[in-house]
Length: 221
Image 1 (cartoon, one colour):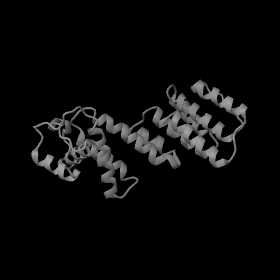
Image 2 (cartoon, helix red, strand yellow):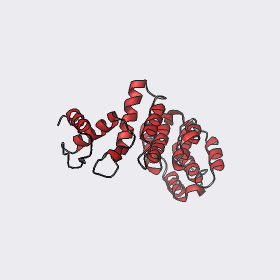
Image 3 (spheres, rainbow, N blue to C red):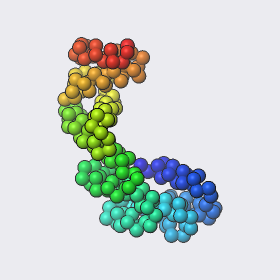
Image 4 (cartoon, rainbow, N blue to C red):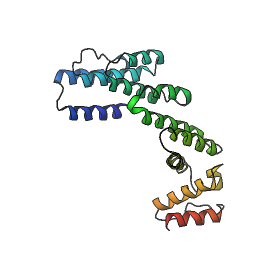
């Protein structure tokens, strides 16, 4: 997440609240964000700006002292900003696995997004080199099962895995997909075809012709 996300939440709240903070609060808020972990938020009177400042400060502090950052999140009185604070802690420290689950467990209304960010980070690590595609798929599917019914969870995991496979160097070869299932290979190739106007220039001749034919049919090429 980060400053862009925090600012988006803040702007939405201000728009819904129907008021604008005083210029002094705006100035204090801007100075605080620039100060990062040393931000001073207590002088800000506007509730939304102060909450945003407090969560931002804790998120920055997490890069230096995780225990202190978690205590700072706990001390935020406004539920929305306390939940956002835990979200920032997870994202700013690039938490994965059990740590991410623990941090995201405090994020309330942001829990689905927090867990999605965490599993995305873990998938990137799994897929940094070919060989762990099956593990990545299983992990992604297990993650999405926490939020969706089985069929939807599978398709969400498939799309997440595909998005990472599409980032790998071209041309596509059997090595590109490592231990990914034939279904994932076909789905990935079909996605590429849809985005490239059915061009097969980046398909190596070593790809299984049957899988390529299925991808072409699925893409409607």
